[in-house]
Image (spheres, rainbow, N blue to C red):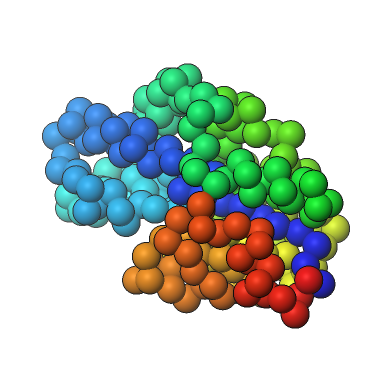
Length: 219
């Protein structure tokens, strides 16, 4: 029986992707590195340090580890400053309705995000009231595709992986859910999240009714 839901944040609850892109782009420009949306797509669902390494490798740059950490922190400062522009109007269509329905039906809900700024984003959205547990980049040491963040969320909810459904929009996130033994709902195109248990193009389509219909033997 499904008792809990675990959500990725970016691309599922809200879309801070453009803010991340602009922050990385500004950093890249300061370093005189090339960075475009194609490279940015490779950063989806991965940690900040993994992201800076992807950008560094794309530019065939040689950068000391402490300098990389400094650059990652600079990018984060740019990004965090931009979060002040977010409001409760910035939920992705269908996301708040789904969270509301889960609350009404008594399901347990956790966040399972690689972002270390999740609390700030949830505050800006006024979304903390929907979550029993907040798992983020500060909660575990291994980021997706390792399943640690989802295992952390399930453990804090007091549930087994097979009692939870994970919502993800990144390939690495679906990989993490599968590695941890979770059922998964992929949000996005077939080529990115087609390996999820069930896939929807958008959050608006991924309603509780539709998910229950797909996993009817589990409810």
